[in-house]
Length: 521
Image (cartoon, rainbow, N blue to C red; front, side, top):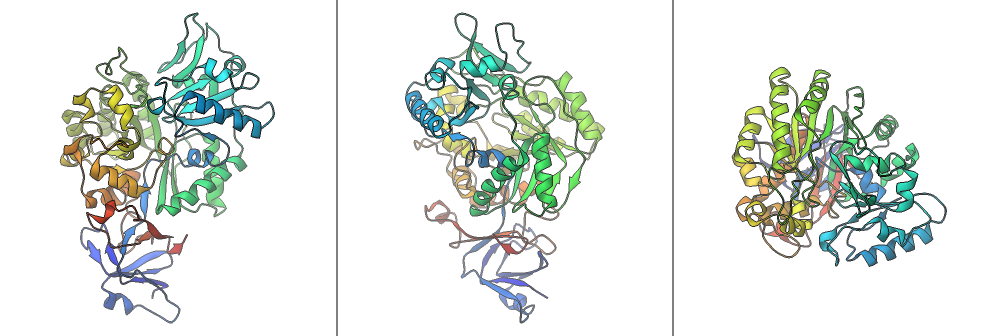
């Protein structure tokens, strides 16, 4: 019998056999029946708790299939948040205040600037940073996390000079004298970051707890943290073992960290209802908003084609070892040149290890041929519609009209019968509310109201699917999450109204209640 019954609801189940319902029953954290109010109330007992949805929409819990959980929490705990700064001067003022509030000799770290929204329309340099922190090492990360800027002391402490060897797939940009100008990209970020004191398990735990509060507030009951280093993975395992995880976590161990060609060993496979470790992460290129995504032809008004971080001869043996050990593979690939490399390797992996779960993260500029290959090889697309809103200005600066109108082509992805999971990649973006991501996928407007790729818009129900069952499939967890159906975990959310194609765009739409395993969070 039922411990919990949700009734008087407009349930959008994501179950193709029963798309809509009025009610469902929960026992021991799982859904035991879905149907009409009358049928479900037959399961009611004296101790059954009733949740009256009052005609509002109930959905499976949102699944963010690509969000850096600990980094979201880091901006709420240890890092200075630079998102939204409008000039280098404003950035310097914020850094100066932060340094005063955090006295000592240790590293100062910050994240979130975006030169496209700043008055100077350029990246800051070490000279800009030396003006506020000449006596302490300073490291600031662009919003995309693919570009960082160090001051002179950080460069000196990292032992960097003119003869420093830059790792493949990265850049150390130089000034007129041949010295580093403080700007590092892609794998070269590790030249600095490997010298920053690591966080402790307690630090990571604090970050994760801070992030989980936001996740649950937005109705995100499952989150995939991609690119997890071993010390963070240990923290996730510790929190799981001590029943301290509030949301369900998919943690993707990274194989090739920034700073060189070192290949990290695979951890053990692990899968429970609250923590999954069975997909490994790779980076094939950089970010579109910072012109480091790898392209087959240069960016607008530039000779640069971005940064290709992997070639197939290096990638394939590591990918093969990953698949041979039972892990799935998720690879960051945004530009068409990077997508080419990934698909060539995936084609070989699919033939040799046919059951391997394969994903491409972001998929910024795929061709029709790429999408056909993805369909044929059963490769999931995990992408971020919110980029169109928050980073659209960058895209307009760096791409000519033809490429601009076909970035993140979700209609083409679905028309090719490729599984599409939507996500946020926060804290690359500030707003990781799935409702904002849904609105953006439906409207495809940037912050200035410009439409990007009008023919690539999605419907409400396509977006809901992409944030629930499609995301669960991309995680390999669709047997127990992603829909409201009998036998699955009771992860669900209650909205503040009955949802339709029109009121999903209302500013007052929000999640009223979030349940994980039948327990309100």
